[in-house]
Image 1 (cartoon, rainbow, N blue to C red):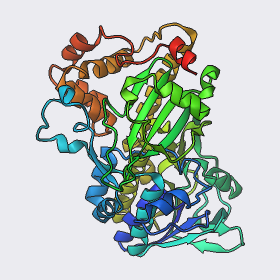
Image 2 (cartoon, rainbow, N blue to C red):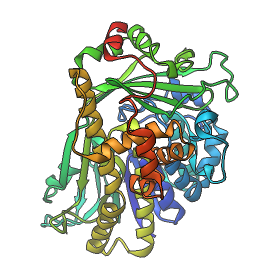
Image 3 (tube, one colour):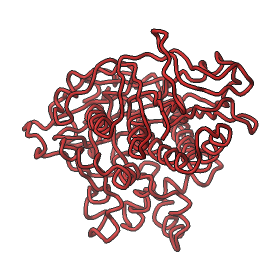
Length: 473
């Protein structure tokens, strides 16, 4: 049994703490924000009153992908039960599609199942589950640095320092501090080399609004029908329609940060004027708004490794979730990547004693690089192409690229509008349960995609041109 300190009581931190506590480790979660969550079933208080100033996306839309749900269902079944009890929405990404697109439900379509809720509800449920499992959660504690076994080229982290000067000792510190993690600065202050870090501006701006069913009937309220996939692309803009818990849902209009002409979407009247031009958003903006137009911008794609030139920059410290790698949140992959990495850490703890400092640091880096980094890079690749496409839209030109994979990815979506098999192929990539290589490697897929999708319009879903969108604003 090891003493483990987890930094951050967000989705990554609580999930990691739960997995490790179930293996009988002594786990303490340290959280800067002071307010404790309400009971998991008090969802109105969680949404309206719970403040988490350390998480800038706390009240922004969330959707839990089937990949996340598979991990939770297998590894933390009590969390799934508690989410359902709190009114989380059970959905199937294929079952949500119009029947004329997907055909009849088939054996195997259960792989598209998931359970989703608003972020405050998710955290309240995970927090209660962690405390039931024996995790100690210390809220209102600000960490200011790391304690080490001495200022050496490769410091051994032995715990954390708090703002009061108190040290919390640990055999392993797990940084789940998210996008704003300060661990790089702490490591430099401890005499360590800087982690290997690459970053670039994600380049998207999210204009988000939450709604509730007008009937107000918790759990049984009629929610808007999904007329297409949850993320849908148009000229100059992407729309995201996300079911939530207890008869709530959210709609996001995502633009490029450099597209100044679309900044009027920050105003509710203009946001609604724009949304009304998209037929597939019908019904999604007809509920009772329970938020203004919340804007999220200044997002980075960033990957940080604690092994440089083959050697750890420090031992006794690992990073999980957004503190390790964070991407554009519109595809909803962050929570899934964090769960995958948390399971890797739990499994490594079963095989390798963290007291074997150097070996533990190297093996966790190797596992994260092998399993999680390809998921990060695939997401960044998609973002770069989509941003370039949106820039071309704003300039009135057509995006051209020498990468044939981008054309094939767009053709797969278009072909899936007419072919139920290809609709499932596209959905499996979006659900994070298959890679593009796996989908396109299936017999006959490439030929069908080329035949059905290569001649499709750039944006096959009904929506306004850029000129019509600007006129609506």
